[in-house]
Image (cartoon, rainbow, N blue to C red):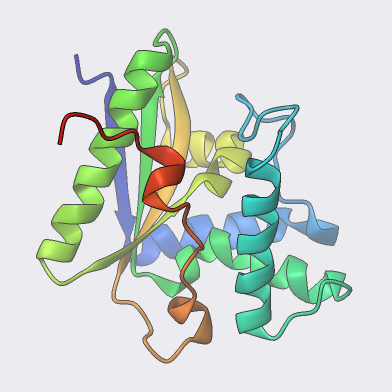
Length: 183
């Protein structure tokens, strides 16, 4: 069905969009209002709570930002809305009438784009944070009302010198998530 579309933005238009979003981030306000969909479950259980917390802890430790340094954490979060310096921003949107199955299809499509980018020597950063700025982005790019912004993605070349790019999220072991039978 391919119920998605992509807006690909670069150059001066991307600079204008980032400047617009930055101007709206007064006092660390990262959202246009309530999100259009829940990014995380309202009630999260273990082991997901710990995984989310541990991965965040590792990322901020690599950046040298303490948990208590709220101002620096907000500055780092704001970098999501700069695509972490990537020269190209992509916005993935989905038809509002779609359901879980089509959202899964979009996730598979997103991963395909990421793998194709690597095949061509490029790096990506999937940024669901852009769903928080759905009104600003939607208005700026004239995205039709029947489409919902799912996420953004930075496309470019990774800064190998940045410590955060050496962080590898802890992953569950194979026996924690796979049942292997008949071998």
